[in-house]
Image (cartoon, rainbow, N blue to C red; front, side):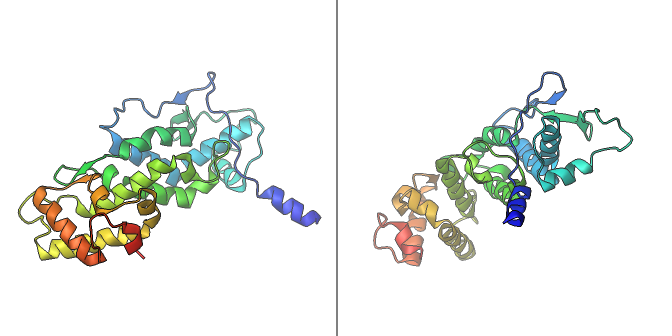
Length: 260
C-alpha cells in the first residue's frame, strides 16, 4: 500500500502558478500584434512555444519560486536552465533573452484561437495558414506536449480550455479546407473531374472523422451551406455530388446518419 501511495504522489498534475509579478520583467505576448490581421504570426509563435517547451520551462521556474511541487518534466526542464555556478537565490529572469510571459499559456491561447475562425467562409476568398491548418496544428501540439502544462481550475485536458462550440466550429472549418478555392478560376470547379474526386473524398473523410461535430450542429446539406459560401454553379454541383456520394434523398437529410 505504501508503494502505491508514493507512486501516486510522484505523478501529480502540474500546478497552476501565479504569473504576474510586478518585481520582475515580463513579456507581453500581444505587443506589436494586431488581431486578426497577425493571426498567422501569433498562432505560429504559440505553437512553437508549446512544442519547444518554453511554456513548460517558465512554469517550472514559477513553481520553484512559489514553492509549488514540480512535476518530473518541470524538474527536467528546470535542470537544463540552472547554472550551477549561480547563487542559490538567483532568479531566472530570462530564457533565450526573453522574460517570462505575463499570462499563463492557456490565457494566451484563449485570446488567440477565436481569431482562427472565419464564418461563414467563402471559397473564392483568399485564406491563410491559420484558417486552413492552424487549428489542426495547434491540436497536434497540445496532444503531444500540452499534458505537461498547467490547466485552469476545473479543466481536465488542454483542449478543454476552449468552449465546445468553438472547438466544433473550428473542426468544421478544418473540413471546409477541402472546398477552398472553388470558383476562383475555370479550373477550380467541381465540374472538373479531378477536382471533384479528391475534394469530395477529402471532405467526406473529414466529416466522418469529426462525426461528433456533424451531430453537434445536426448538419444537413442545407444547414452546412449556411456556414460556407460557394458560387451558385458550385453550390448546385456540390448538392448533387454529395447527395449521390452519400445516398441522400434530400438536402434536409441528417448527414450524421449517412457518415457511418
